Image 1: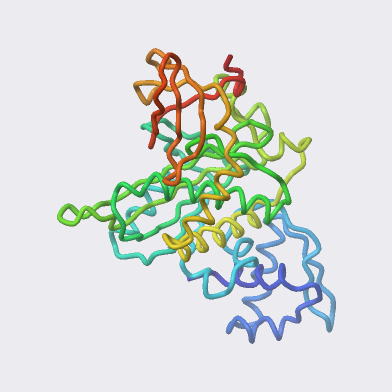
Image 2 (image 1 turned 120 degrees about the vertical axis):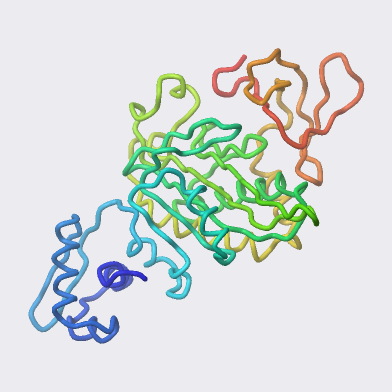
Length: 336
């Protein structure tokens, strides 16, 4: 259940005028003392709250925080009940999978300010420092075959691009399959993990894990990532962005994804093609997903109707369609 503090914070963010203690206590179903206590706690957490006799409370400033109250201010009240916000967790995907096993409904969301064991693709780790990024997992129950996971992942990358545009008005790109880029630098990774029914082969639950670098500084990245990874802040001159608003926009776009699956295939395919920079570039693909085997060079031609990458390898007149894999784009991330 959402705390009084978070519910009152959402009220303050939504209001452009003072909120009286009396009206707040009635709306929240708590005592005036509980409202006063919430105000004192929020002030200690860095929120600027002006109080005026006979007028009440007005939010004058707020820090960049990931909290139930901050995110809830930008979502319908009924949506917040299925959103869990944690200060720290080993992995939001692991936490969300546990909720799925316990019968959590589709649309359940887990967000954390920090991950101690964030997961990337192919068993890699995902750096998840506190106070700068968005680490979000979304539970989907698509009732489709395991062969559709790659397509859902592509839809999720479109949802991320749309959320960043909706919230900040900024343009992004996609490197096939699902790396989200800004100015050709990676700012977001997506990991989808499925639980499949053995008899039917259909997906029982699918966790869409999304990590977005929002306010990281260059020094926040490990040395081996500094030429590859960036953040929305770095790519916009060090400006600090409010993460809670982007988290809410992302939830809305993932809700739209669920509502549109699979009937809106054509819309997401068109959007994906418009965002994806991989076609019409020289690429290298690798036999192992770790990318440590000998590269096979070729030209990326197009995104097919099932979101595969059409490739013509050097020395071949035939084309190959890749459904998944490790692909690097020449000229991107310093590759030549």
